[in-house]
Length: 250
Image (cartoon, rainbow, N blue to C red; front, side, top):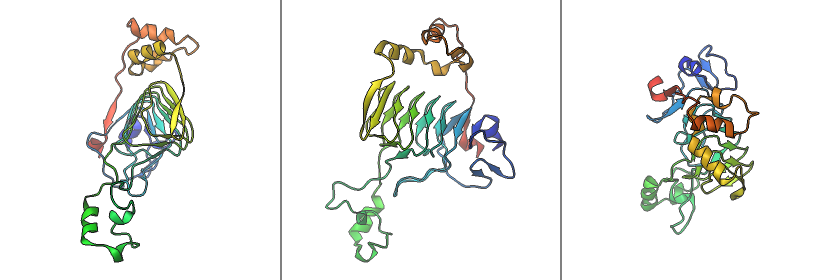
């Protein structure tokens, strides 16, 4: 817990240091499994707590791989990858459970034999099928850098939200979102682009999120061209963010 707080990996908004065996939503002795390659950078806010999937999905600890200056008020599943400078509101859901579409029925009788609704009608064939059934074979979404996700958004599995994109409140995103696109609706569609093509290319080429934020964001009253020129001419220094591999702390 102390290692998390010392790197400003906060489990509650403006989280105080660990006290009496608790740190934000984490309690001493709390058991959970995490991926061996799960890495969290410094200055991250994971405010949502343990992740609860859709019915039939896999719950997880509430920790995931996240880049610096990102915060989330929603629980995030282990397996989701999030870049730097992202802002994630409440109510984010992932479509991490599904029913079969290629059988005679989509009913859960084919994959949930422990459900009391079905137990009197199970056959050996149903039990065998259920043993090998997975509610989804797709990976969790990848969220780029500087992505803003509004409240009550639902994301399909296997998609990517491009760097600089914005997802409007109450949207359901079923396809990849281009960098710097603003999308909304159900299913979400591109509403407009934040910048024109040359500006987007320049932002992506600059990879400004890899540089010292004290220099990149020094004067927001300057035109965006100013920090980009400084990066392009080597006048802003790359920044090495401290990261934590959670399995090592455990």
